Amino acid sequence: MNKPLQGRRILVTRPAAQAAALAQMIAARGGEPICFALLEIAPADDPQPLQQAIARLDDYAMAIFISPNAVLASVAQILAQGPWPQALQAVAIGPGTAAQLAASGVEEVVVPAQRFDSEALLEMPQLQCAAVSGKKILILRGNGGREELAARLRERGAQVDAVTCYQRLPPGDANAIVSLLRNNDLDALTISSSEGLRNLLPLLDTESLTRLQGKPVFVVHPRIAETAAGLGWREIVVTGPADAGVIESLCAYNWANHE
Image 1 (tube, rainbow, N blue to C red):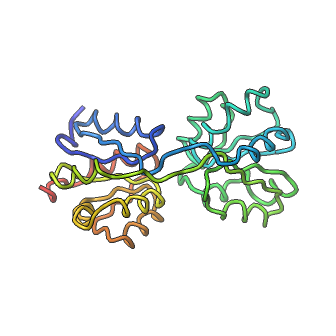
Image 2: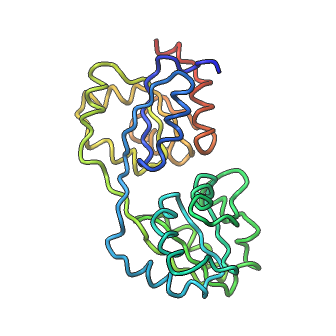
Image 3: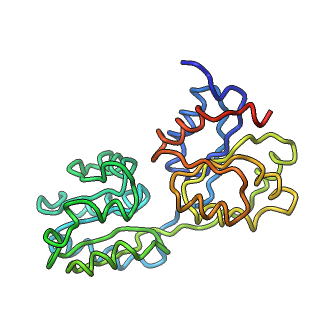
């Protein structure tokens, strides 16, 4: 394998449980991944809504998982009560979530074919009016999740329970990033959520923020690109979805412009 990222130090900001795969891809192509989670994952403040949903799991026609962390926070508890109900269709927002479901013991999963967001879920045949009207649907997500999916499914006649099964917390400090920036030891950053990017800014002093905004930022969704632009980033690369899309864009990038 050639080494298109040779000598490049790339900030990987996914939550710790999802960072390893992208870090390994970067390293395999000669880069140096620097893992710094901009979202720390913790149990939900209130475990009761999840426990109540699990107790009546047979009532649901569909369970939609909004992230790999939603799987990690819920499936072990579900399977501790018994096997996955045969009539319950598992839906994943993207391939990473589907892979985590498979690793957790849930293999019959439907997932959007191309884009991996709430809008793509809503375009799936399984979530159209004829398929969901009168059905009970469980959405498993983190705190502060977007309401678009639940609202649209209710408009289509579904009975929706959106359960917060984990919470996302900002990191306590960004001293490691500040040190890298002051020593000019960072070439780019990858961002997988607007929330994570917003978490970073208050942790940086003015000089560090200015330096970071001069680095290319690789984002996995146009919505995150809009956030980055609004926060002052000058060079934003919208990648393909998931880790494969990020690594493809990193390898195709013209690094000579930043020599």
